[in-house]
Image 1: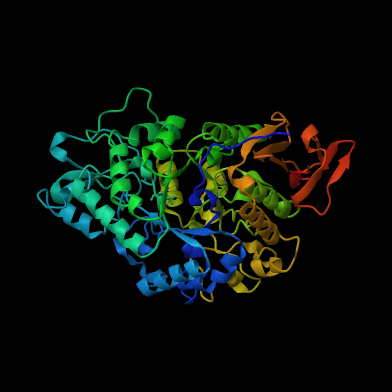
Image 2: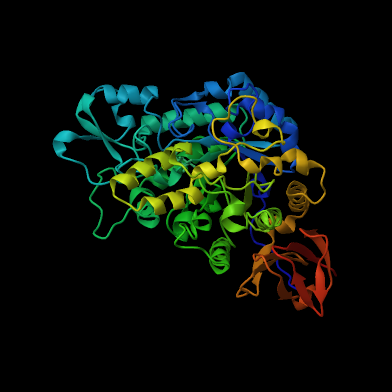
Length: 561
Ligand code: GLC
């Protein structure tokens, strides 16, 4: 019997199960084809019924929507299409009445170019707001290359005639980067955080946060630099002042409320990640890293189960004694979980979705469950560039075209990896537009909605939805799934990912099959007698100490004394 006492301290935010809502696509209450806050309010009981304990709602601040709300023009106002501040107040009250915490998306690496600060800033070199952003006077020549994710040329500097200067935008040209080296700007941001914390939000998800501090001399990059995942993070973010700023934010805001903060991005090493969240540093509470959703990032580079196990195990190992990470397999920036890591064919979509939900809800780290994944929603796989809504897709297409890339290959990758795949409307029932809107939806509804929807799964005991509920309940009722020590079992098994979670005198075993054929696993000696806590099939076959798993079978077993 494994006896292990976990040294990690207990904290309320470690115990949350977070449900991520993309508000534009969740539920449209007024028929304009766009989801809204009242839509969320109408679905509060559904959200409660999932057994999640917190929600993170993507940005709903005033925005011209160049990047669907990640370009904010007023941090204290609600986007017109989504409602108003009364709706917000009612929504957060509704969550709190149901014991659900509310996490706000805070997008302060950049604002919209339509924010008043930027309008002022660009108006004159002598404007009081000039230093709220990063400007490069043209008489100094063209600034050194900086990469932009959404720019048609991948260039983060945009020339602005009005003051004969370039401004910096790591994302789209309508998302100028804020200058965190300016104390007045930082003060404004803390004021914004106080505003929302006083309204009762329980946490902040800090968007693109590793980029807030950069070397503002903007030196040339070393030879060999490439605009790839590693180099971009290393050379564009995690700058020299990052920790001073975070400590200040912690002192000025976070420490004054019962709130937690999670950073999007964890730097480019475990040391970076630890430096953001280790408790003795009094900075942030949790990070999420991208490695888990970057494996096999491209159709030419398919991932294997070995890659999947390796990434999740190495992060687990690195954080076993200190710090805390998030666990997720999808969000609004990546493809649907089942299409990416499971099997979205008609035959295996449901069972492999249940298996992946079992993974998310039995790992150590705070689980983030993306809306629709509790139903097994899959990629929409747009074929035509005109169907895409996302600026990353549209400008990425223009960039590839102008660089003479193989467009057929580009489109094949986009079809699978585009962010629009995970932004299609929530599938509520089998009526027109999946019951999402009575109008015309802002983005196409996935054509599988007649089979895959809440109404059809609600009363079926074996649905993906009800399996999800079983697992949230299990996690909420069993600390072992939150704090228990993780250890892989048969790490080299080519088809199965198995691990134990152990706490005090208890051990649980999680077994996940990742293949569409049967697979076998020898039961470890200490697990010969057990109880089944969760199973995505009605049976579990055992033969002479061997588990005989069905395709994508996922079971959670607790050791019997
Ligand atoms: C984050 C968001 C993404 C957004 C970007 C710019 O990565 O998750 O959706 O486009 O930041 O704000």
